[in-house]
Amino acid sequence: FLAPYTSSRSQIDADLGRAIHASAAADASNIDPSIVDTESTYKTWLDGIARPLIADPSRRDAAVVQARGRTLMDRMRGDVESALDVLDAKSASYSQSTQGQLAVGAIVSVVIALALCAALAAMLRARRRLEVERDRFVSTAQDMFVVASMDGSFINVNPAAERILKRSRAELLRKPILAFVHPDDVDRSKEAMAALAGGQSIEGFRNRYQAADGSYRWMCWNCVPDLGRRLIYASGRDETERVAFEIEREHLAFNDIVTGLPNRASFLAHAARALTAARAMQSELVII
Image (tube, rainbow, N blue to C red; front, side, top):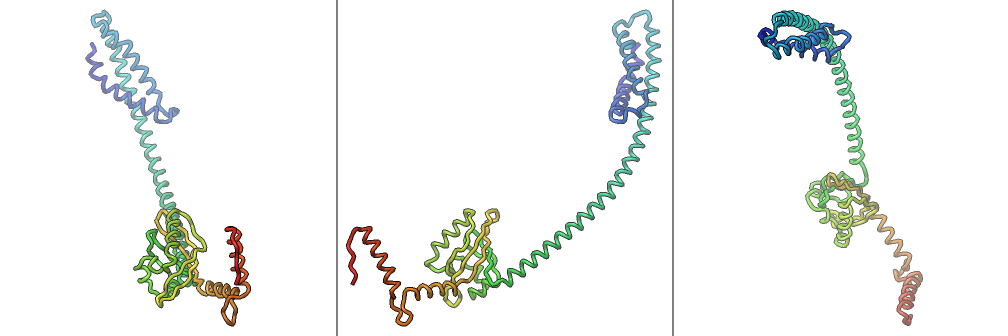
């Protein structure tokens, strides 16, 4: 009795599953009512035909039940085919609409891409312009602008460095920085580089650099570290003449202009220091 139903059941399940899935994924207001009717018909066949025949195959009305089942099966097949035809038509309509939307989207994407390319090109031009201006400023500056590594080597220097130290760029990049520093300033310079390696910025640091002619130039440095790239960016001003003036001014303040001997101010300064030391040590002081 169940042969006509069991032979078609797998196909009915697949078709019904497709129909129910399509109705859930689409606009319910536009779905053909036969899909819902197909589901109720299937449940009727299952509850009223298949299960009763399985429970009692020898029942007297088996032929009537079987005929009723065949009618339900035919109706269900027709409903499924009709529903699938409707869904296929709507799917084709959705596909055309989607293709149109994709075409519009492609045009919009091209426009956006062109706009982004134009914006990127403008940004690159602006960046290049800034780089040119920066390079021009660094090249024409009177102060030294250098890029150094944390291990104490010049990576890049501007023309002012060559002019102040009277050394070529190749020579400055070839030797360690401390090779140009005055021996008396090496320890202080190492401490400053250690502070920079620790992330501290330095302002107004002075040390002496030896020029190619053997003379030493007093440099005043402002330095900023870049820990991420392990670099030091520094600007150095040549203050040799200023330091010489300060030394000369201090010398003139405590020495006679004509003879060069210590003057009254020098005597008073020395006497004050000696008196302070004598009081601290509770000792006597003799002036000859």
